[in-house]
Length: 342
Image (cartoon, rainbow, N blue to C red; front, top):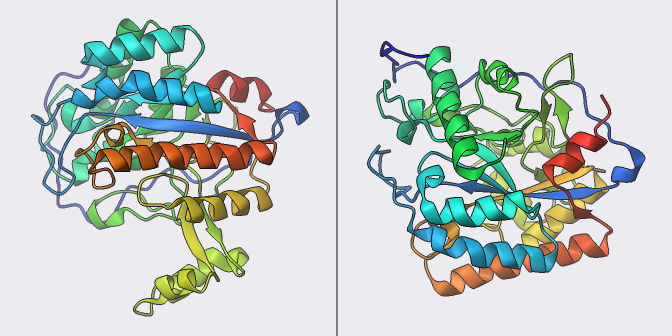
């Protein structure tokens, strides 16, 4: 148990040195190509202001039942990665717990350290990445959250995503200690060092093993380069970044564009190009993601109206239609664990 408060400095330079990519995972032939829909299921807070422990509203959970129904209609199997405020919301507990126990959804863990006890660290941008916390504090926050998720939803979660993609040098050990088999904290091609987070620019989009024992599998959120020069994407992006407007020019010319497979800020046309690039690259698992407050208007920068909510639903319908046409079917956590070659 964690007891004594530990001071956490917000002045340390640089970002988290996350675990280095390991051996690429292989799957049984029958697995084929799959898609995993992941949802950062979290409280509502203003993304434009500093973090606050008091920002824990969860009114958007009233949209969960309707969205779960949409997922089932289009053949998606949602993975609801829940954090501390959501695990204490009665609507979320009822709706998501019932879906998970019936095998129509999965429940995972999503750690937002600033709203997850124990509260021993300063609230600031750097400490919003759980991997920056002292190991004992990160471990205790995780343990309390996992215990609450198991108590509330009646399931034992096997998948984790660090809030803000804040996977740190001690996170893998914590997950293994608690029997977590899948992590989905890493976002290839993105760099969060500006406020103390990890740099994932050189990380692969394919699943890979985090340990020699092959007990902890990383399934990264899918982001990929598309375009005529996609094969040169990482190096080209680095060079273009030295020229004002360089990355935008490459994207407009469709030579090389970084595409994250999320309905938040990514159009259907862009996402479909990303899907095609992922298929061309031979990814066995495509991981979609978004934040649950986007299921209701006014909680994220991406969804300000009911029309925006409808557009998010339409985005998913279009993506799943393209994937279905390509023979890509939904995966759940059990499918992945059963098919991965150890």
